Length: 257
Image 1 (spheres, helix red, strand yellow):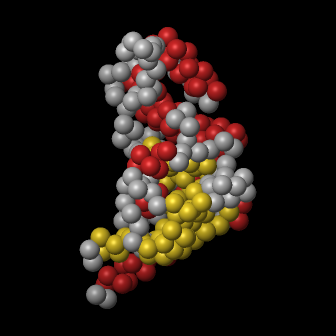
Image 2 (cartoon, helix red, strand yellow):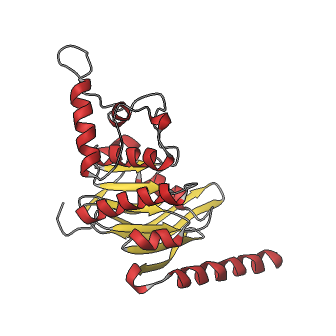
């Protein structure tokens, strides 16, 4: 493990499901403290790639290197033990529980040796964590069901970060959100980026939002990375043109089959 090694390095990873090739020779690098925007159409292989990095799927070929050490991610729990956390679209929050109970879900603080919850301490830490990340929640006693979509996403991200995550995978964190809610989440990601304590892969369909917070853009098409540029060297127009050209090629191919 070295300070200069990337947080995650994926080398020549391929994955098949029977006759279907989901990923083919994928190479991806996530430097420490950076935000990588991963874009691509539905069916491009983004979900499969994320599930490999989280230990849910095993690659058929290739290798994964975490902090400079090659690893075989045996399970989701194994990936988490290495600091790899994922926030999916469904968030895995319990609506009927409070903000602070959701923040400590499955890792509750107990009053040892008695099996009583240390609610006061969990409240204090939840408030501290959210304040540090710039998340405005009126009260950590509030039920999650009463929060906006953006606030719920922020709670899920905060929970992952304070589970000692070093790599955070965000699966469509801005999906189905209005401008105000999306702004809350983008500001949170920007805040995390400024702190440089966690490395982030952000999957999204809105290229403008990705360009706003990412350091680098990777485009996954037909199971492989076909576009890899720093944000400073690309633009919304270029990304749009690349996707429009891909759309045309796909339809031409279908027309000739």
